[in-house]
Image (cartoon, rainbow, N blue to C red; front, side, top):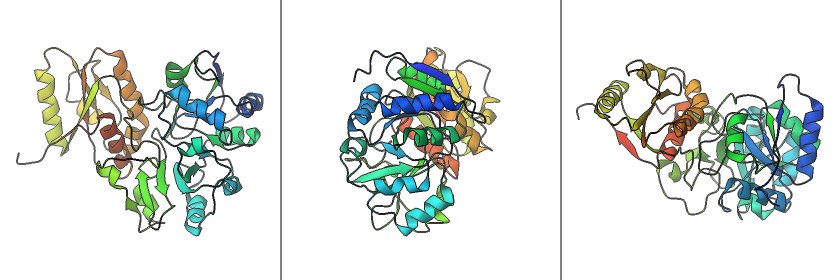
Length: 356
C-alpha cells in the first residue's frame, strides 16, 4: 500500500448527533484495509483493521513508526475482546467493568487471531475500549477490532485535534473523523496483566490512585524511573516521544523556586532563543510574549493534561532553539503529565530543592 500519495478525506462529525452515513463510509474504508484517523477521549488515533496484517503494517509506514513498537487494539463492546486474548482473567474483567469505556489499556496473552505486526512480535496484546461513542460505533460498523496508535508522525507530540492530525499525516492516510478536541488530552493508562504481578507500564488518563482501588498490589515498571527498555511491551516505553523540534528541558521542584529560576532564565535570554512552557500561574509572573506558552493550571491537573500536547506543538512555529518546561506535582494526572514531559525532554531534567 502506498501511504505517501493519498487523498485524505476530512469528515466533521457532531459527537452528540453523528451522521451515520459518514461513520459507515469510514467503516467501509477500514474493511478495505485503509487508514482512518479517529477521535477518542485521550488523543486522536490512527486506525486500521486490527486483524489484517497488511493494513496494520501500513500504520507503521504512515507514521514512520518502529516495527517493534506494539499497537493497541480498540473494541466497541465487552464481548469483542474475548477472541483477541487467550483468557480474560477475573482481574481483567473487574477492571473492564469498572473503567471501560475509558482511558485504560490492558495487556494479556494474545490469541492466534492477532497478527504479529500488531503486537510487535510479542506474545501479548494490548486492548482498550474508548469512551468516544462515535469511535465505538465506527468499530461496530467495521465489524473488526481497530488497531490504533496516536495519529501523528512518530516521535512528535500526540494530536488532540483533527488539525494536528492533518498537519502530520495528510496525504499519507485515507480519512480523518473530526469530533473536535480530545477531552483528556493524554494517552490511555497501560497495565500489564500478563504476569504474576500487575504492572503499570504507562501512566495516562486513568490515575494510579484510581487503579489501586481495584489493584492494591499494582507495581510500577522500572522504565518509568528511567531504566532502559530492550523490548517495549506497550507504546511509549522505548523510543523518543512527544517531542517538538526544539530541545526540551524540564525544571522540577517547589513552585516558588522553579518560578524564580524561570524569571532568571528569562532575564538571561538576551538572544530570545528560548521558549517557556509554563502553567498559567507562572505565566502571570513572566512578561507577555509569544515565547511563553501555557499548558494549563497547576491547581487543576486535568487542564494540564488536556493542554500539554497542543502547547508543545505550538513551539514548532516559533524560532526557538530550546524550551524550558515547568514541572508539576507528580500526583493524580500530574504523574502522566510528568511522564510525557520527561519523555519529550529525553529525560533532561533539572531539579531544584530548598537550601541549594
